[in-house]
Length: 322
Image (cartoon, rainbow, N blue to C red; front, side, top):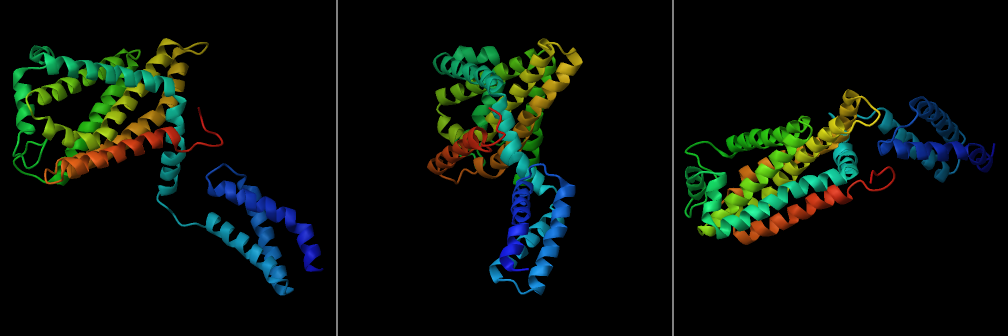
């Protein structure tokens, strides 16, 4: 059999196998049995081509197909890193965008109270005392006072790793509290978002009013990109859960709640990831007073851009939920 006839008879199989390998490499579902059957045929064709001394371009093509298939079928254990990459690269941002309206509601419930509370606290000192007490405000003043080598942290011992663990538990606790409160028909999540927004606005306004904003803003600007976004997404997940309870449609409430929980999971995954990253920045970067504020603001702008790009642009294409 001539090389041209051999390629003409089996070329379609090679093309189909190459396309199937491409889909499998992207993580798309493929027919495993068909893939293995085609892999065996490719190996047979490669052996024939080599034994018959077919042209190098033909054997090289078959060798490449066989090698790609071998790596896919017998690839080493990646300890779930490939699945984690797929989750963060595709599934999570698509899932967040699919719940875009709920996310916008959660964002407004958090941001608007924060802005109002900031403005009122900045111009009316009495307003802060309506939401917190004088002792708490004095604690914040001490935390962000001039001369504090670890801005934003009050501690007498321990290192950054200890604070990293503390921030993880603290951030995750807030996130899951905000999400879990959604079981109360979504009202709990809405109230938690409102309260956190008001509290943030009061603290920021008070520190600006007493002249400590130059320490506060460099500390919070970077990890806020991850922490605040994580809190908003946690609240959005809770609201989605509450919506499933309030508006079950033709489903039973239990079925609707299960469906809503499945739709909320990408929001929970995104929030968890962002809150862990926020803890790392807060422990190792934000608290370092020796880093110039201009550098922190520059890094913060980059982090905010990356978070927005991840949620809004990552994973777009075929199968994107919009």
